[in-house]
Image (tube, rainbow, N blue to C red; front, side, top):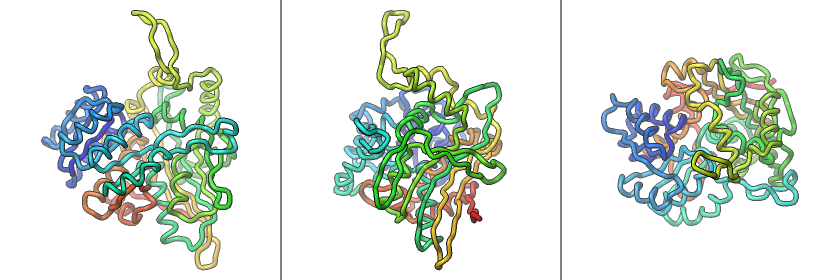
Length: 407
């Protein structure tokens, strides 16, 4: 399999280090707007021969992406950029006749009059609108194939297939006890994406109502995370699983809640109140005259790159899916989860836990596609695929998943 990886940040770099250890990969072109980042990712893999190469690429240049896919004879485009570039890369892959995999879906837009009651443009709507064209082309766009969304969706399908006869609720729950020495505020993942998903109206799904929205940070609950992380307060956050799971898994309610913490929520609210979450460009003075810049990009530039925090980070991160329903006529509740210890991921891969946990899932998915274990046409979520081969492969990668009965 020949892969064009677009994005050589923390997650993209982790993808290269995980993929380098697997035989399914014939060649990976690592492309980034900043050529030095792509070159650095490739340079770290010298012992793996010439299976990796670096190229400069503007992810918003659809013709440029299409040409590079054709020039490098790539079978698939793996998108490791932030969600702003999803549709550019999605369309370019379709035009080039390549398959496509991403970890975050096309952006949403709130309802103009009732943002905290009704959905406007939902996450992924832009991609699902083109599902027919992908199917007609005989190509697969596997969307939302990171950890959340991604592994969390695989867990949902596994629960439906093997653990339950009837599902009342599926709730993705994410929590961690990570700390970063020397920083009062240092998000472990892209702040651009974090602002987007945390300050947008969260989406909830109910079978008799469909998709609807609530206020940011609504419905707080304390969830007890495994492997020593412990109780963390989680709140509703906009996330792709709520838009994906109901398309393939029968459940009466689907939610996503994130363990943010009061301090993190307060900072996000302050950014919003000051307008610093905005993506609309404003004019500011510069050395050579006025320049146009997005406030959110300024916030991101002022914070440390999450990829560089691993040496100062301690603790574990947990992604998982809580499921409630019945099996053989008896009530059942389980939490399917995946925990990564930062000390382990740094020692084994030189990558901090959050980016490594995100990156391992698309690599495993690519391997299943390369070997023909997974296949399909059109725009599909992880729930559309057989879950057991993926979960077995994750264990083979040295990072097993867990199942806890809830009592």
